[in-house]
Image (cartoon, rainbow, N blue to C red):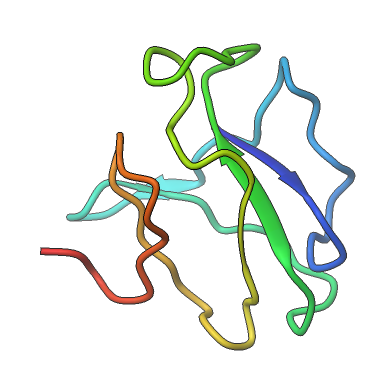
Length: 90
């Protein structure tokens, strides 16, 4: 799931033990449609299992990551890769 926080996020900050869960799945993998309140602000996230904080067993590398939705309305992530891709990775 995703631990979410920041001024872009349109829901209360998620709790570490209860990350935001996928809202769907497509050909690439899990999809997270994040509710937004201000797409011009940073959406911050950490990918992890509930209460997981061990890289790479229960938490993806990269630590705190972010993107600005108005600049990149969709991002792609690969498990075990800290890069935030703005186009689908090969």
